[in-house]
Structures are given as C-alpha cells and as structure tokens.
Amino acid sequence: MPRIVRFYIRCIATGFFVAAAFTGLVIWLNVANLGHLFLTSDKVWIAVPAFWILNGIVFTGVQAVWAVMQMAEDE
Image (cartoon, rainbow, N blue to C red; front, side, top):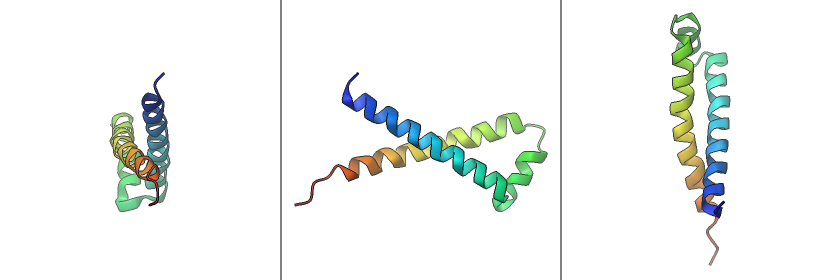
C-alpha cells in the first residue's frame, strides 16, 4: 500500500477516535443541553451517529493538516 494511503488511513482513524471521545464528552457533560436532547429524543439512533460522523469528518481534516504541518523542516 502506498505511503500516502497509509498516512491518510492513520489520519482518519485518529480523527474518528478523537470525534468519538468528543461526542462522548459532549453527551456526558451536557454541553449546550445536547446530552439531554440526545438522550430524550426518540431518534437517538440517528442523532448520535450523525453527530459523531460529522465531527469525525472535521477532526480527520484537522488531523491530516496538522500531520502535514509537522512534516515541515526547520530552515
């Protein structure tokens, strides 16, 4: 497998792991009353995965950009 593919898969895994932790903390700490909204909704089976996936996309992009920036060499 090419290095770039392995690099991006690693970024995806890291991004979605961070998004899972973030989603869990948002629900547990009831940030902006989202925890109550999620847990009392009858559509929790779609709300929480959607929240996690959308945050995963964002955190994956952030992780990829951060990893690329860390590859820079000092002059």
